[in-house]
Amino acid sequence: MKSRLLEQIRAELRASLERLSKAAFEAHAAATDPGSKAEGKYDTRSLEASYLAAGQARQVDELAAAVRIFETLSLPDFEMDDAIDAGALVEVELNGEDQFFLLVPTSGGLLIEHDGMEITLLTPDSALYRKLMGMRYGESLDQPSLRITEVS
Image (cartoon, rainbow, N blue to C red; front, top):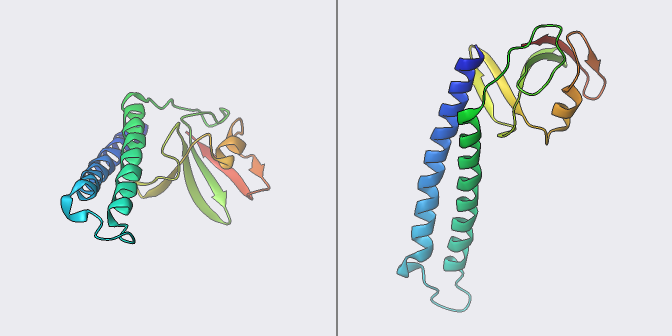
């Protein structure tokens, strides 16, 4: 299951990179177009377009780095009684609902629909990621109030 999930994440990241690259190219073209030249001292179209292009270029670089990481990433299998570590798919009961988290090195916050589950990617920057590390099946947290119901 994890290999299919990993392929789905890769495909989603590649598609996002393609869309963002196209938008960044268009923003760059708009910023350098002679038609966007300021017509007066209060006309900031060119400046705004250049800021947008620079921001999107930075996002493209970050997303490209995430794609490279996921291209070589493998996710280990965990036994139910193993301690949670990087690469674990964790099912928790949170506020009476089942939720799924995948502990990965990048792309935190990305939601993936997979086999009827909505899986949230968590990175080490996340407080929840750090709290889950080392926990085991059946253990609970108070903040947020959750219980580990499966580790794989």
